[in-house]
Length: 289
Image 1 (cartoon, rainbow, N blue to C red):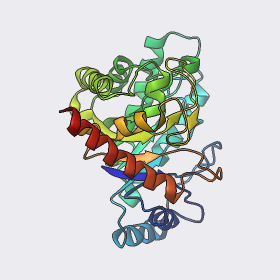
Image 2 (tube, one colour):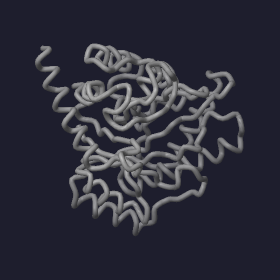
Image 3 (cartoon, rainbow, N blue to C red):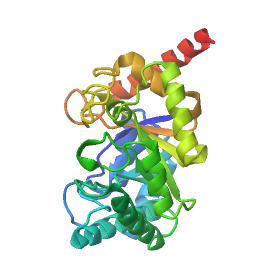
Image 4 (tube, helix red, strand yellow):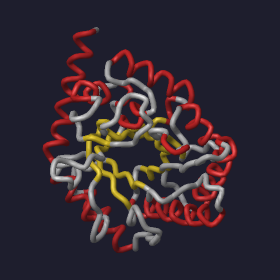
């Protein structure tokens, strides 16, 4: 597993590599533009070259770009869908430029509308963004389920993948907080095993390609997307260790997205805690077997 952190790319994407190294990370994630603004951005050739040089001289093995939160590929508002298409296409093109492992996307929300139609709209936007970019993969993230957000279940993720064309660039990203908040109890190994089995049955085992590690400040099935620092929420250290030690996650990048103790994002201590919890979880599984 490549354990890492969401970091800042302020001043250019190459700076994110240094932030990852400071946190003893082997994977990183960052926004390619402001997460709460429509100001589109694609990296210049110089920025891309600087990133690639910095990455090559570092222990960072996987870089994820998180698409901006404003995107709603499922919106019934054509203007919002057009903005979403532009933002998603630019994120994928930025991923192409720096050789990113993938772009991670919250597909959007049906709000109070028909979910099936929303999935169809979302699939069309995603397919067009893929067609207008080159090769960067796109991972659809599961959601906590509030406000009609798409991807709260594995069946919805499967439907989104199919609506978007089902091509090889498409995968999914599983978030531990979102799983728990949407009703999947992953605190113990048997529950975690059952959840991954269900995921693979719905979307296919080759579609799971990245992970987000976040504890949950809200309860099981609450449908509330409220991240807590690793070990400080409803999952607790034991639940986070269970997630981190799931054997079928071993080859995946796993990025921490918490606020951190100083509200500046995950710090080196939290990344190290995740490494330690992974080891504890592996030892616990071996004793059970």
